[in-house]
Length: 591
Image 1 (cartoon, rainbow, N blue to C red):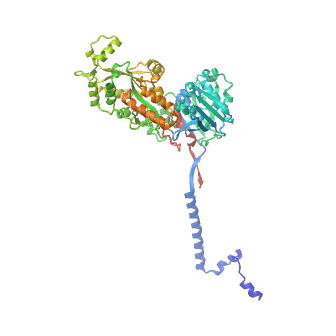
Image 2 (tube, rainbow, N blue to C red):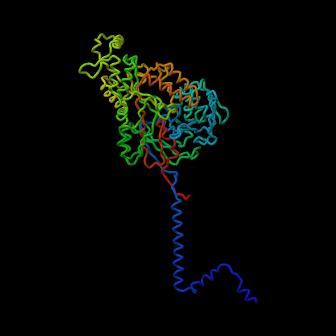
Image 3 (cartoon, one colour):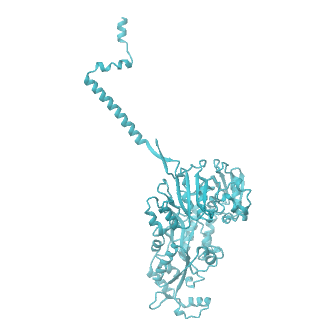
């Protein structure tokens, strides 16, 4: 009975010893079939594993690599108090320092050191709370005292900061260790844009006398809280800085940068920088002039980019220096004689945007339907005839009407016969290839309708003192960088029409003044937009200037850089708005 029960007892899986006896009980054919099945099983498993790895493996950014870029100029003040006066200093300061807010190429104005910003209902008080995890490169936490020191230093005349005017009339106070309050005398909607200035560590600067600040070694060996920290610089025997290196700050409160080292080399002009790129002494160029873009674009080692820039180029009428401009028909005729698309092609080789107002696309209040004189040379000549101009036989210009000539003659003390005085205009502009090309095309287009234009070129360093401040021009062709939150007030309010003001057309309109003032006094974006649209309509009716085009910025980073997206910038330094997301090295991971 025990033997029978033993035979019927259920057993588990065969033991290893039992499996070892399997070949002895199988036929040769069965053994071959078993081997084939085992091989197929192993091959299928390997294929499945290979497929899984191939479909679930991806490359992600990795820390490492170096990027070398050419800059035109030389660093002197890598310090937020002074950096705005130089593109080179601004570039380096943007990488080393961080502000309460910053400009993001994709999102616009966003929080940086600020955790949150609160605005009082009357628009006069801004309360900013600083991030708790923000630290300077020396490990010290960024606190309210650092913001307080930076702003008061800017306001202190002893530091001679060019940013002083931006914080004039602003009272700053410390609420607590992480909170700062800014109080304005009157509401000023664009105030937030001023808070992008880099914050200095008060512990390192408080003991330096204001008059000695420009001489401090910290200007070239900065300590900030940005994504990159100072590493080293090299000088030649004459003391000129040849190169400047930054390394990633792994304690950065945002996502730390991937690229390990950024090195900048400095050149006297754009031609030298382009030659350095061609010779592979650098891997990218900070700025590519329009006339060099074609050559640079052929270099496979760089990726030429053209982010939009809030830079407006226009020709402004001075009615006091050229009496003919007092007539609206004349100003409209000139506007209709200009083919802006052709001007853009000559000036920027087509890389830009034709505009019709000082409010550019993407800005608060931009009105796409703003009326503007269309290019129509025949209609322009009809307007000139209506204004009293007569064609001189065999000439390509028109004579001044008698009343306007008499006013000009009286101002100039000239006794010449009015019938022989030609309608000629002096167009002043800056010694810059882009503006010279623009001026030459305007000469051709205005000449086609009988207006003789002569170009007078001035040195960039003399423009403000000898031309703008004394308003010494009949027509002025110039470009203006409008800023992060463009406020047309400095350029178009009647209070800015004389002296150091920038109302270059000396435009005066009570309705326009009221619209500009109302836009400044509210932080409601929709209300601001309505006021700016009203302002644009008034300008379109009065034609105080001919608005030509908005520029782009030519930037050529190395093609080895990945994830570089720069749709728009406000200043050249804004190209580094997302530099911590750029990368060179990669690594493979399973997901």
